[in-house]
Image (cartoon, rainbow, N blue to C red; front, side):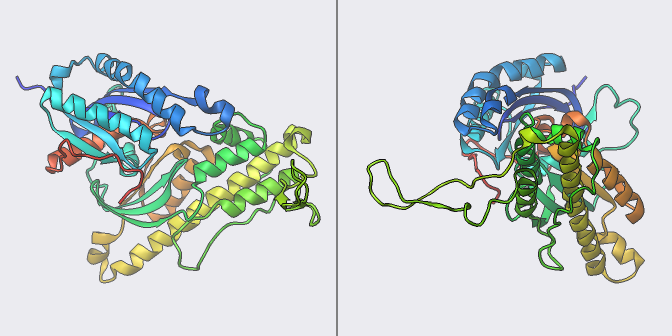
Length: 391
């Protein structure tokens, strides 16, 4: 009796060392994640060198644990998939090198997977614990789909004709929404990573307490921008530096020379002097605007796709998205999930959100999409390169 093909997935694009085993149809047999939050918390963000070293230390234990939880051995693995782009180059190199070594030693195909595209496959993954009661097929009647990736490093909207036929419609021109969440968390004095803490605090606040700006860019733009919102929150918490203080020139140097030197802005207050209620109001107001910005561009994207389809109802059905696929760490946000559900219901889309364990960076999504690429004959050889950006 033939056993189902098992895919081993590896993910090391940022600060999560992850390994997973999936079977056909996106069935997740194991999903192991070794987080590095404890290593980066004191710095308020990911330190690339620390992340790379931690990946090198953890990758093999993670792989062995993923196999054990799946009830599999290396002999059961039919292919190795790895997140090869985009991400921190040093971190990616660890995963790609490990995947090459495993694929070569096992004599099985090697599959490079785009990390961002894998986030768009995460909503289609099925856990072994609930697969028996979940009658939805992973990809049936899903495509074409409108896709949204919202994470610490990426914010973009896509048209997906299949899991591997993806066109980007718009992306952030500065900060990703997850990065904005983390920076706002830091401004409010919350632990790292700030996103989940901002979400929890926002539920206690007044979302209309502050009138922060929503970036629309051009009237027809599908791109995002969160730097202005982040700055508005900073000023709301710390005050706007006085005109005579911001960028003040210090004419003294340690050697007594008169070389001008810029000093940091002098803030009139900080989060330590704010009450919890005031912090909650800032968090709620920020979250309202951040989510509105995402929903605004989703609406524009769907309008554009519907308008470009043209023709009769039958023709529109060929291009108009049937579903909305959302992935990335911020897809776990409570307000965003509520707004996405309302948007999908109003616009006649089937909403596919990832299970909470598949929102953050994980290897199950890498293995799942790797299986699709393998079935399409899209495999790599040992020349596969780690790439910090998507081509």
